[in-house]
Image (cartoon, rainbow over all chains, first blue to last red; front, top):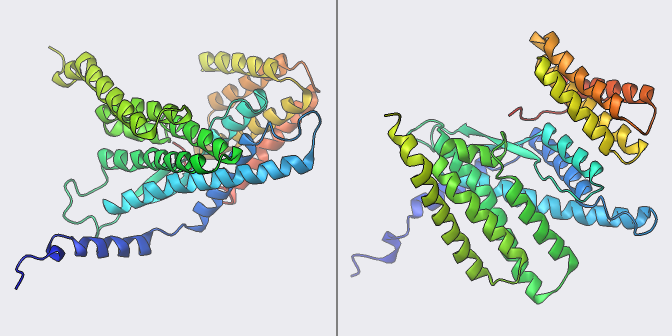
Length: 263
Length: 99
């Protein structure tokens, strides 16, 4: 009787295919788990550096704060990486988490020199592996820079979603741990956008300068506004407007002439 | 090579001067040793003298700038950090991204 049903509109095949891809390729390898564990422990130590006693060293208080910091770091880094994995699988790439030793060492040095005031959250990069079957039929079949850029952008976007979730939770329960988690994720979203290989920002920049010109200011402004009392909706709108404005300014001032080439 | 030697020497002096205590000096030079060990492991097949001189430049600068702590212990900790890091990467206990 009904020729056109709603089931024809929902791409059931794509959803089932995506769920199958996630089940097969989402798992972490032992090397990834090792790198994740080291990154989480180091980042947790860095953000709890100043919390080992108020007037004198207190091991119990320090270990309790370290435990909380490790939980915050674990949730944030896992959400960031999960976003990249899920996005990568959607476009036919398997994403592999890769710890960055130089970043962790630099972060530790910065923490020691600044006595815990400076949080440099640059623990890892990622590598994409081409999945031949799932990627079949896609435009530019192999691994390409723009595909990598889209996967890289998913990380800060998922971190932003986590910040929004924490901000909503903080309305119902004013908890210093949630406040600390918000600040940590804001710093993480900003520092991972630095255009230094192997961070996400470098992959976005080398994938598409225009995308970087839009994403960088938009995410930085939205992340900073999350710490203030600005409502979430207005923060998103303002960050979108700032991103579009700076994207246009960048195009008019540089990219337009660079694209046309030398005259 | 000389340029990077001088740059890293300056960086070593600045970081050493910024260290507020001997313990922090020791921790930082140990971490720098670990970074150097990783660099040596990556270049192990074709390690060239300039890389070693540039690393030595940082250590020399750090020794010049180190106000707190024993200089002998600084060198020892740097070497321990480098050897430990090299062994960890050589035995595939640690595996990470280069760039």
